[in-house]
Image (cartoon, rainbow, N blue to C red; front, side):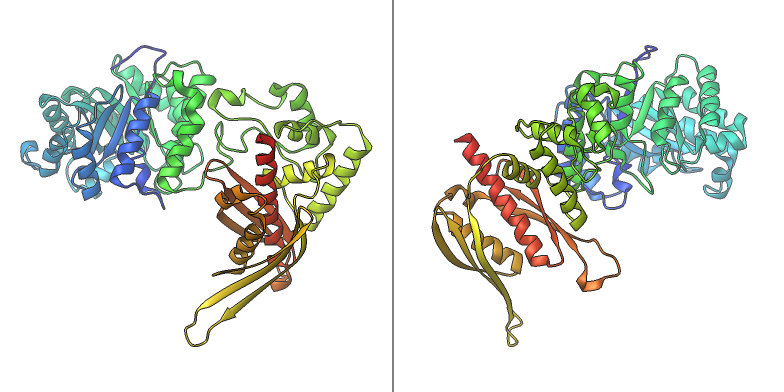
Length: 529
């Protein structure tokens, strides 16, 4: 192992500990794809799972043998031998060897409470279980990472015995002693003091950190542990994990590389941090956390007029790093708090040049405040904002104009089949187009009828598809009379964009969002022509 003072090893346990999080699951193929992606990013260790715990992990270990990693080492995870069982006769230990990974990570008990009340064995036998298992795995050619489970609780209860468990692992030949804050309840000062005592007790042997986020400090404690002398950090991508999750490696790596000056093998690829984070969320079918530090969509978003104005003049006045450093970007959010400078910045972001101090700008700000008062919100609907800006500041002409529409839903009582029908009249290039379309819902029927009326003039709209549809009630307590806000995600197969509509009528709000989506597609197609 690399024991240079300024070097930190990154150990990813997304495929094992991360999958214990609620709603997190990976297929075998997804586990393989993620392992390959982590390797290309420069992660040092990839924990693939627990052999024998489930068929999926076994299949992963069988298939991953055929892949030659450029950098990372794959680890199988398991426990020490059972009490009063010879290590070479323990089936679980045998499965760790059968996984044929270059690294095996095992956990053992540190806390006497667990030794006597959970394992129902003696302190002496627990030490023998640790040392025997580590030695056996090392003698069979494996690099062993030893995870000291509940270490900080055990150390607080009985420091001497907790250190004895680490000494047993060291005697067996462990290559790293990882200190686990398994319950996630350790406070910073106690953690730092404990890590320093361990580092001082085992000079030359790398110490690792494995922190959980139950008190919201998984990342902070991991970083404090590194500052106190630890040279390995374990965690999961995007903080996946049991209960409130594990230390978020995305945030840990961002801080170690860009804030704390530690060297990591993945530091050279830190510009791809956002892409990696989004890739993992996509594999897990989880919506990305927009508030996630460094990589979230909101991480460099400015809404208040004063902040946006300052960021325009000097980005670092309100941004702790350049967003591009981690593959992110600066965003300006327009709302009823926005000033002219915010609108100019947003327009520039969208490729539109505007004059900040003009009557036209003042009129736009007044209109924006009125729209937001009615329930419209454009923070997450850039496409609708671009339509609004171009309509107000540039003469787009009438790409199409609504004459009327009607939507009806019919239920066949004999078959219980539900069919929605939309009739639309649009003025397109001076001609009225009258179309009818059906779907299994009113929004789908309206969408189909609109595009049916437009495809003769704009045939590329056939490629535009609705991917997601969200509705939010804004007036709690108003029941069916509430104002609703609709968000629609659309795609042309290459790009995606969000549009919005709002009002007390959900069909009209949906029409506005669909209309803006089609207008956005037409505007951008015209710009490319």
